[in-house]
Length: 397
Image (tube, rainbow, N blue to C red; front, side, top):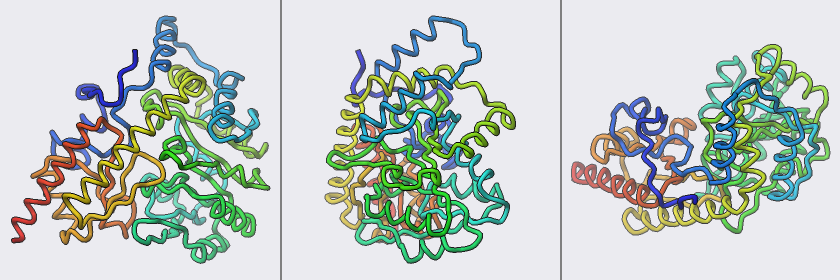
């Protein structure tokens, strides 16, 4: 019997990045963490049953991913969740979404070429572009009262640059939680076609949407799917990143072949993670209802954060995002510098909440709080936030 989302699971002592190595990010041990974007929830029972069954086999040799069961689990998920028909032949394996993006970046661009990214952005994008000696071309999102939208005039100017080769889209967007609506996706596609720019879409948060909101893959609106790739995984949704494995949808036959040759021959990754593959298949085949329940729980957690700030810190601005389990919180009206606030959070509140500056130079007034956890942990984290802020107010007074 699967336990519910309120269950506290002690992750300490498991070499857990978020809990055991919190000092790496915040400089101190024994903090309550709301940092790394995995959750504190157990993965669903059908996934555990599939893993236990495979573990009982006791032989873990090289594992083939290129077969109907793996591909049809993915295409079936897209059909049932998003009413999107995906050709199974376009589905390929990858060890991670970041690997896919990195590999396609090297295939589709050269040193010195421009990669357009909407900022603020997942910090790995910055590091990857710099490591590959490409140029980050930042399309800063517009923000009005907590709502984020695309600056299309600036986006077109960036895509029109003769050295621009890739538009790296994050959909839903991390860290703001925006689900790009049909009309905006359509405009992005039109601009990419106009300037011959490849659209590379990171959709790893696609399942984690608020009740009443709808995610649609960009491929639904493309008349030229050969000029795009979707990268995603089951791991963010079902909390299995440690099992390794993701996938990409690459409609263009020649590009897909180039990717597969690079995967197998240059990188030696022809074999999949056995347990990662079995986890994905079980999750996508049997766990739709579990995801619905997860999203309902995350909805309540987001409302809790919103209501808590309204009551205890009305100067804090937080709009519930359309997707993800990440709360993007504007703290500029508290009146403290981010350095002072982070110092108080860590040393007084003993809580680890991500500094928005990791996601962009202009995000120095934001915090990113992971609400993918039991409600009791979230409440304790908010209380620690208050303790930290109170200490700064007393100091200031």
